[in-house]
Image 1 (cartoon, one colour):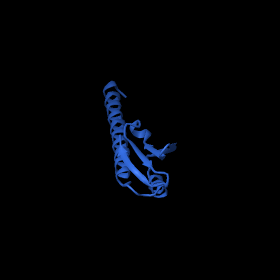
Image 2: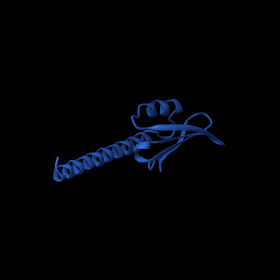
Image 3: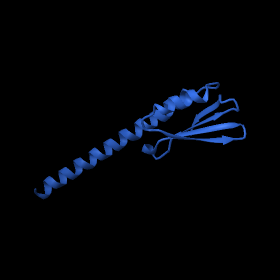
Image 4: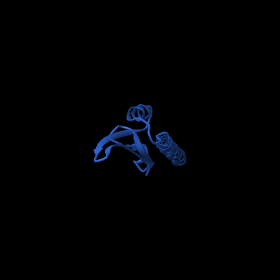
Length: 100
């Protein structure tokens, strides 16, 4: 291959990588924002976990808080820039869900 062909292939490869990264970033952002919007006040923790388990790009962890518990969901595909924080009362019902 000559230098021109190599340069063209390199640029096309770089553009493909950027496109795939942008698509993954956007899809993971949409997943966090969309799922977080499903969690209105009074939804059970089991329902929240079932919905979060359907996420293709999400991971989440649960912690105990003085007022109940909290789940924080995020995606490594968007470097955890978008986070969904769901606070539960002592009965396992959503108090608040917010995207940060």
